Image (cartoon, rainbow over all chains, first blue to last red; front, top):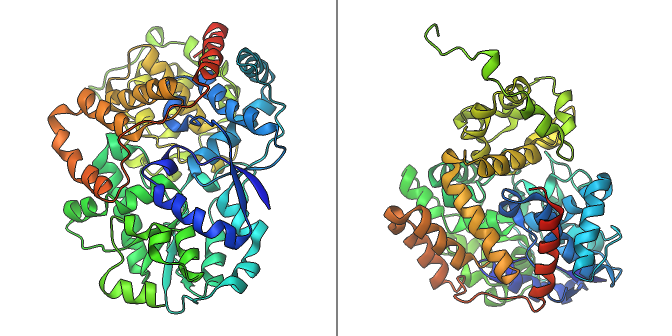
Length: 291
Length: 192
């Protein structure tokens, strides 16, 4: 299965551990991810806050570059997934926008017909590879491990999304396929605070605290997520949540691709697990790595 | 309640609604039935000056300043929870983006000073390199918006750095000229 791969800026920087785990598991899952040459930033939420048409135009450059390969675009980042999809929607639904975007791309020697499908890597793993296939590849069943899947917001929000906006189950099915247990908790599609962590830290820490508290209350040994910003806020800022609320959370927050890698028997270092801010240690280590 | 300042019809701005209508998808706000699903779904609703339902009511009545100067638009984290739940399919998150742009344009983003500094620097970096460079983005942001609070950012920066997650150098795309030509054309076409 071959796809055009759009990593996004975070995956090349603060979320490099996500990329490392994707690189490790993709061949085992039979996924061929060919990186889109010379891709640019999707615009995320910040660009759209300042300039609308420019934001859609830079996003559309990626879709135009991808079009000549006639393959689905796959991205591991929820923000890239949402923004690229939104660009497709506006391109299709608003003729005036479509005309202007066409003119802008033309100035750069590009064109776009609007026919490239943008998908999240979770969708591809769960629906194209399939959980049944993955369960047959498992070398080390994660029996006894309780995992809280955190979907966050942007992956489940696009109108034609691959999972339910309020009750998604893709990661739950995946967790079960790896032999682990997916815990029930109420926060799995709530907001982690996203970029508010930079500008309104206390507010964002409060959101993270509720997510961590609910995951812990459900008995989870770890959280898995699929978005660079969710992972950063829940992992790197977990010590700040603890400082602010006098809590003692010690929950490793992994990417779902890292959990797959562990079940496929891959070494922690190949999966970027050494880069987690909240280390897999103590009792967690024996449960997660010994599962 | 009695000493609350009364807003007279004459001080309201009826063009405001037309501006929102003129956005792609903006006409949808006519359909708002004030059900409050948006406000109830909003993770930040409790700390906003006016939760989303009230914002729509204020827009329709022409309370330009109250809307553009509120903290509401800057606390929207684009989680799209309201948008997917809205029974009238109003693109609420996109309206919030439009309000952010209007507030910046009209110099009314005082409550969103920090968020707008972050966003403007993001735009500058993407226009310069074609990609975001998180390290430079946060450095610029701290210098411009949080200089006296800079120490607060050190511990998380160190956590990223020691785990090899903080690249020091930006990556510039090869065909930055193509991106600039596209942006220049958009500029000529107008709009914000």
